[in-house]
Image 1 (cartoon, rainbow, N blue to C red):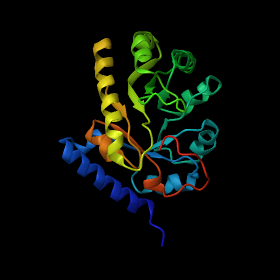
Image 2: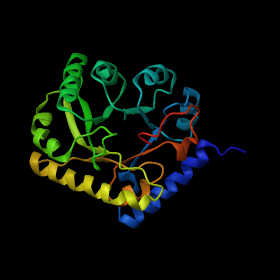
Image 3: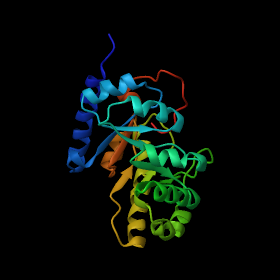
Image 4: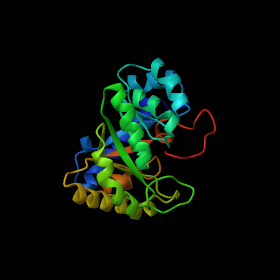
Length: 236
């Protein structure tokens, strides 16, 4: 008999609480972002009924079809690689855009946000392992562009996000989470203000991420089960 979303959610919440306890943190300091890519609106209704309100999507076209059919109380963040021709839709659909990896994209977000009469919170993606197959800032480039990014009028830099190299051993992700946390501290020094968000940790390693300071964890498979369609593992 399949396990329900509510049962999975309860288990994940218990694991979040335990990880927060080990780290001496309040569990309310961690936002669970349910990565709902390839799951239909009916599944979002089930998730919201179980008490899950925060969702992450990484494909604009899928989100455009899904979000209008989902409960109004659901809150959405974009966690994919954003192309310039999709920025207007992203600004319209999402309350936060994670994965901003260039000044050019940040400028386009700010321009589209101004046209929409809103300000958009963003997270800056860092390629913490320097992997050629992944998007994201190299740390020196991020630090060099940070003040220009922060000066854009219609975005707010809220923090950093990263996807470490995949390993079946969660502990192997710890050095990358530490690196991202340390880079956030360096960014705060440059800007002279705190950055509240660290988006890191997925189904296989979110407990280690919490121990290293994650404020947003992106969990898909551990909540929803295996995806309905076969989509390469990327941001969960």
